[in-house]
Image (cartoon, rainbow, N blue to C red; front, side, top):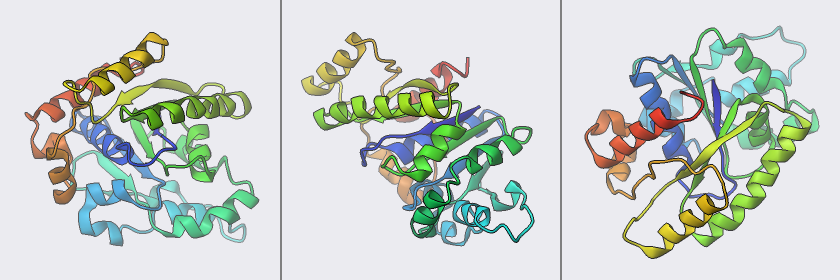
Length: 257
């Protein structure tokens, strides 16, 4: 199972959701790989802390290798690192992804990630892909490589407007490159049940028949502590409300069951 977590709008919790759901998958015994394609490297730093700066070669080196025809093929596994968490591996990001972007796009290397992850099919039960907050080469590569797409949504009007454009972009990828790609669901993040606007906004999505997943993820300062300590919630405080919501969300993912 290959999942991409994607939203063109930044600040919606994309890396937090990717890292925590991947950590839960590994914690429950699934051989799990997280591929970080965002040059900001938030998922890499979340899982490795300061060691993320040394986690190379990673995704940038993988894509750079696709540009070098003079070299023999390099095994995809050579770009993957272990993490402190059992069964959870990482293909780490680096700022070099930004520098490589135009070269990769001009040389049309859009299917290389799909082929590489297919090579790993026997090694991992689940592959999670974190993407930049833009529909660029890396995001398209991820959508082409994935079986499903999860869309973080942070309960405001700007997110709602962006959501419709995002769904249209996914449909285009489905039509042109990956007919098997499914929108597995919309993950409601930073939900405040006592505030009327988030409740109304999410209910409108439900009423429109969009695949809104439950439970919704609560707003919590605990997740900021989780970031600071580089410990996913299931390892930091498994009994915390947000940890329980993440566990329930993972269990409820349509393509997991």
